Image (cartoon, rainbow, N blue to C red; front, side, top):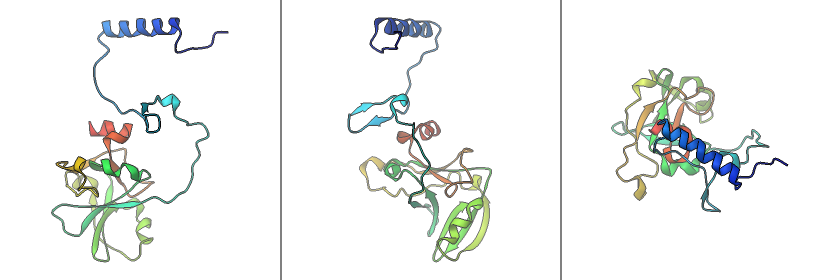
Length: 190
């Protein structure tokens, strides 16, 4: 009998009274944030509207992407992503500044991956470790986007940034950052 209805007058007046108090105390500001979006409906979604119940871990194929380093012919960062559809919006690559990265040669190419994930290199064949470098030495380097020919990418400078949230347990230790496509990426981008 006391169900919560978003369209009830009592609910709306209570929310407006709360917002008025927040405004009076100077707790409100105008800013931007990331919002989940439904392409089918063409509308923003609340986190509560996104199906999270029944979530399960699954194993599936996912791509590794080369980010060729500018001014370093034949050298690339290797990023792993579970969201390849966001690569068109990539603006940065994050590395953990305090972790060790391997500079490895495989064939005619040189790649950088976090040392803790050396095993993923073995999947691609023989390799030679050329150096071990701190992630902080990669911060500030520029790279070419895989979609540099898109009009939206024109003028975007793609840089390596430091981020202590980069994990050693998944991927390559290089995280592709697309601020318009996720909350963590958005906050790091800011």
